[in-house]
Image 1: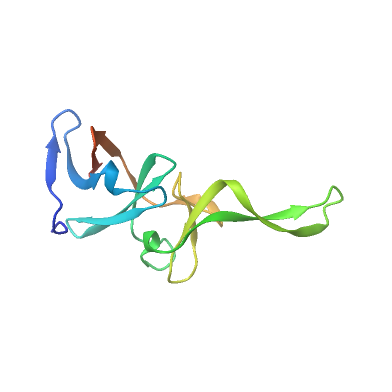
Image 2: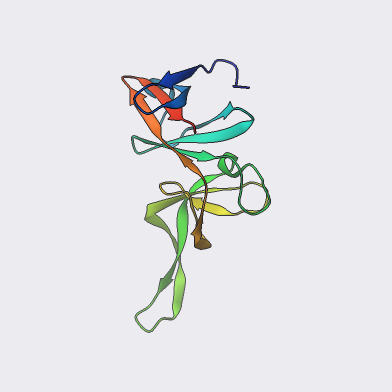
Amino acid sequence: MEAPGHVAAFDVATAMPEILVGTTSQFADGDRRIVAHDGVEIGVFCWQGRFYAYRNLCLHQGGPACEGLIMHKVEDVLAPDRTFQGQRFSPDEVHFVCPWHGYEYDLRTGECAADRRLRLRSYPVVLRGEEIYVAVT
């Protein structure tokens, strides 16, 4: 069952049903929305003018991966001799953090920050004018 206010459409070109998420004007940079389709929750993120969609199911223990903090990756700062100098926030990589146990995922790829071989299921995001859809398979 879909969340109230969301309409499923069917894209003949791709033969995948689509869920209307909202309009681009409803998303500020850093916003997210959780939508549902057939019992599956999908987190839709807006970051630097682009949209990303992932299954809202943490790979660790099934928590709501897409509902936690959004933050820049914390990086260690090392001196040329490899001694620890402190930490900083990455200017390039942004993560979202599962609120259950702190598993972090790369917002642009869905990869688990602790093990890049693991990745959340992603969904194509389709923009039609101002409208944002997620294609579900």
